[in-house]
Image 1 (cartoon, rainbow, N blue to C red):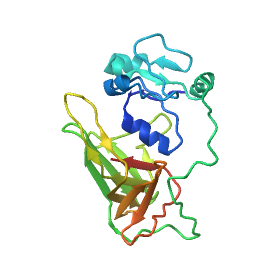
Image 2 (cartoon, rainbow, N blue to C red):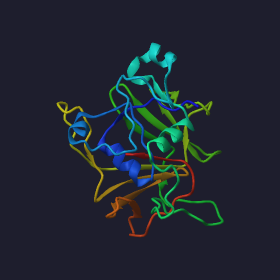
Image 3 (cartoon, rainbow, N blue to C red):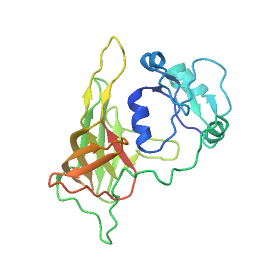
Length: 231
């Protein structure tokens, strides 16, 4: 019933959403996207006009953090909005899956180095941590030091089974105020799961779908579960 807040759409986010056959909603879009008129039909943007069915302005967030972080989506109503715009909300059965899922009977194991926590310095003010729990075999997300990152249906920190930390080329400039991350072709990175991590490589095919490989050239298998992808 309460999803968001909506952020600013850029070409990187739309490109990655396409990999997962996902619909995308945003509060607005970057200037370069406006100039190129590259916004797809399934991208809804809100720039101060009256909110349509499916969106609302959360007064508690607006009072605390301002308009920029207050526009939210309303769950299933978003699907109704998309349908009214003429976009299908059913899954594409022929869609190429991103992950090669592990289907063994035994517990998934990773022959890598120990990783009880992952630390990411996102900015001077925000340090993101993923802390591993042996009992649940999940990585719990914390930010701003020891503050758990929570959502509406989780009393504790948001947790992930798989962590993908992937490298790309960043053409960010302050003048454009936009991250232009290149995540096409191929690159390297790390995969973290069940208290271990390994080096991996990634390749994107002509359709833009990711494939992940171990250092011996075999395709990476991952257990089913919530995944975090950082670039």
